[in-house]
Image 1 (cartoon, rainbow, N blue to C red):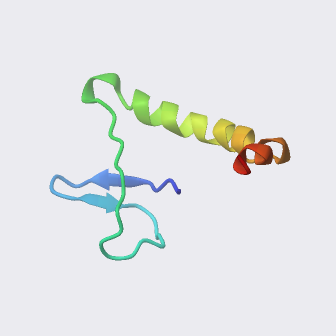
Image 2: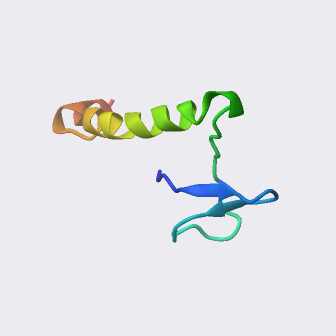
Image 3: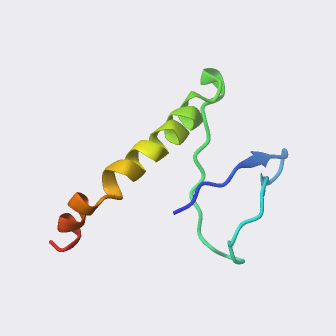
Length: 66
């Protein structure tokens, strides 16, 4: 899973940076509600590092073997 910055140009979602995506790769797009000024996007980005610390550690590896 990766996070890619992008913008909507009025017709298409356009990536703002290079990626390893191939044609027809499936993606999910999370878009903030227009009335909350990007709150959803900001919250999602803020939580990424926390989830990485929680799930990417040796103690959590025990659950991978269940």
